Amino acid sequence: MQYSQFAESDAQLAVASLLDDGLSKTQVAKNLGIAERNVYRAIQRMKSNAAKRGYSPEHDMIHVVPEGYKVKGVSTYYNEEGKPTGQWVKSATDEQQRVQALLDAVEKAATALPKFKPTKPPANPDENLASLLTITDFHLGMKAWRVSDGDDWDVKIARDVFLNAVNDMISASPRSGTGILNQLGDFLHWDGLVQVTPTSGHHLTGDDRYSKLVELAISVMTEAVQLMLKKFGKVIVVQAEGNHDLASSVWMRKFIKHRFEDEPRVEVIDNEFPYYAYKHGKIMLGFHHGHKMRMAQLQKLFASEPRFRKIWGECEHAYIHCGHLHHERVLDDAGATIEQHPTLAARDNYASSHGYVSQRGAKVITYDKADGEVHRVTVRPRND
Image 1 (cartoon, rainbow, N blue to C red):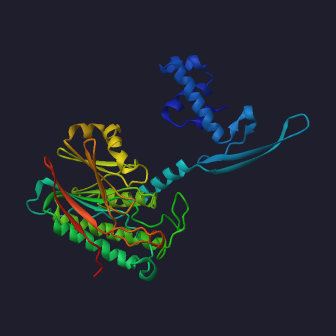
Image 2: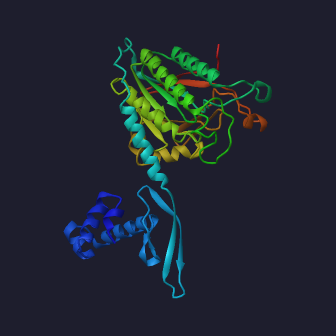
Image 3: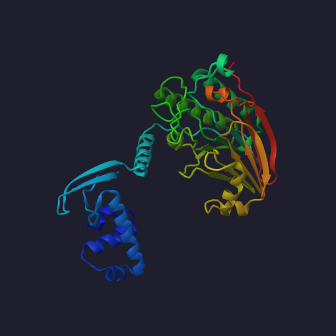
């Protein structure tokens, strides 16, 4: 077995190269200065990866599928003497590799886009303040009809509602040193060419083509950031993953990051982990769509997760924001305030037919570095 072709990390590759040269496990451990059990573990991981790609001689599997694929099933034919005479290998793309390929492609495409030039900051913003503009579950591309669903909703209405809401929240905010565009997930109603939810395959009622939704999402997000730059000293952008837009949230985040790469007053929180945090003085702001964990458990995650533990320990106030369920709720627990936000979008046919009712809106909340929340306004949807 040539271990090198199945190594998945630099550490495994170092072990594999020496094994392929004929060294024993003991010799490999001595050469690399590691424990022999670590060599054994690396071998087991490489064998596991080899089996996923179709190579496991002890099981008569000797046909390796290409990198980026994994074995879905193997049918081996044996003669009367029990010797293999033929084999059919069924393969499928490796989902993790496909996701990484998508991220690499998005990054490459986004870096080629023209960048916005730096703009002049507003005069004398209050650096103690951070204004959080939250929009969640916007479902751009969803189609609703007043007669059956209670309100009309299409891409034209959605565009006007979004930009009006951003303008209204900006106008209602003090001139803060920091403005946070908190898009909490499910900004797009569906996630690709087929109008279904990515995980459950639930069929959706959509308006227009996905390519047009991409153009519209790029347009309104760009305009929102530009509007915020006129009012706030700097702009932080959260583009959270939602259950309707697992992939779309990736390209939206990457697009904004590279589009405003030359604007030092814009920062995009860019991580693949579906939980996000920002520290403002003694204030911790946490964000999660709500599809992975219920709001009552979020404070435990942000307090214990290694990525956020340091921020949690340094702050006197913690505010965690989520969406997903389209209605308002606030919970104070274990040293944190967890808030579930409403949506600006109309109900789709599924929600209306099941009797789900909530008041539509979006909130802008302003936080002081030391005192926490000091100001809030709720805006309602308008497309006039």
